[in-house]
Image (cartoon, rainbow, N blue to C red; front, side):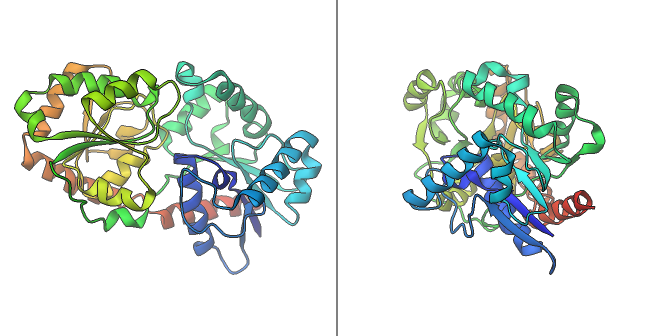
Length: 359
């Protein structure tokens, strides 16, 4: 059986989906059986290291592969069939606009924010997601949801038949399980994520401002992540009221996460929540929103907060930062919980899914 995974994200600036594809593809190849071949589309044989900011290939081959994808999207499934020659199952990403004529079609649904919170996206993103729904999701022989919350959202909002979509939790890179804390001048609370409206950073900054002065003087609030859409006003506040690191290379992230006294994730909606699972794997206690998939992913291994309540968030920040015992308790629970989210487990479940799709 030949399975081709759309790895177009390897050629682009991307965060969560790129990390998912990178680790998932490597794990699928490691777990595949003797008669199973895992390919990467478009014509991507190797993917050396994960870099969210740059293409995995030099400029010329990057342009050539993106041109091939564009040709398939414009000219139709017959061109895609040529690029996928010999493929039994094609797992499409959200830049694919045509279904193959010969291979069976699958895809991953990461989140439904375009339907649940359209105000946090650009109009071009909303149009692209609707096109992906019509041309790929509704035609797919099977779908993967990265959390049960995402699966239920897809059933409810997209009308997908429950039997066509399966929950397969994503994983966390091994480096986080063995991460050694990075030294910084002061202890710190950490948020990791692209600076955009969905991450709810303004509410966190409002809450941080209300934390008692002596606590704020002892701990830094550190934000790590690139600037995203509609972020100029929030960026101005972050630079004034917190320590902003910008984009942190993937190799440096485990140490940064492991060194935090507290991980804070007040996001309004997540499909899986990679930064949360990374923090749990690195033995860092977490304070997260009581929304979307986050209670499902964290279980009893995190503290929860109403993401729309600065006062509640401030109280929780103060409580946790003042209590090493509670942070230690949550860190132990989080590390145990993170064991569920191993990439090899995700790959094993995914291969079972693909074998069933192939019949």
